[in-house]
Image (cartoon, rainbow, N blue to C red; front, top):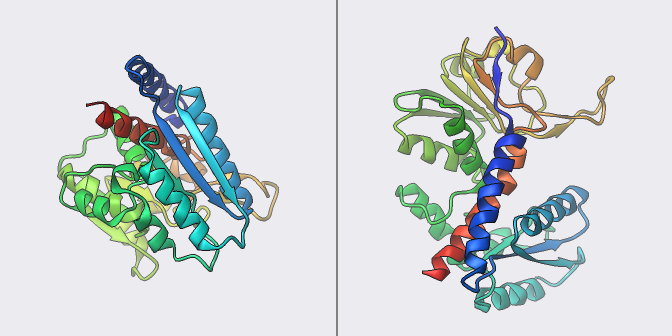
Length: 287
């Protein structure tokens, strides 16, 4: 058996086409959806992420603002800029690219963003709303995963789900979204005993731990849906430098029923759902 692959690039392109139409409709009303991105420091991966987000915005007919600060910038400067963006009615979404330099209080920075413009869904108010089942913004990566499951017609009601990883960005919100769809959810992490015992029970397995090829084919229930959120760069062997996920794709695809690849799986969907959240924020302003 070879698993059916969910093509994140194709699904992302389809959704972005719909977003462009919605953005054009807003523009006709005199509103241009706008995303402001703040980058602090010179982390190469962060710079690429922000550049891709800005480019995706412009391609979808949205406006983007990018503010780049030196690694040693005084946090007060960034807080002041966030306050300006919060007060600007033409800006609908604000994101601060993580990680921030060590002299920043990341939590305080995220909390300084207006909840109505927190398109990453990280503000405590938005996290609480998600927990209550009434989210204002859904964190982008879990939002993308839900869209992928929907596109593949994966049955959710009553499904056994195992999430490997308990981060605030993916693992925890992913669990809340799947609980809301009547799944039975187990969250595993670095202290979990006998990880394979849990993963072999999963009808849906979400790997989001940041360890290359940690999940192998023998850890997967035959026919399961496997969602690989991890993005890792291999450091040795003939494939050194290439990207891979948390799942060993070659062995997993022979066991799973449905699987996402890396690259070309969840990654493109994350930026697409950021655009979706920004557009939704603009549409709320238009009402």
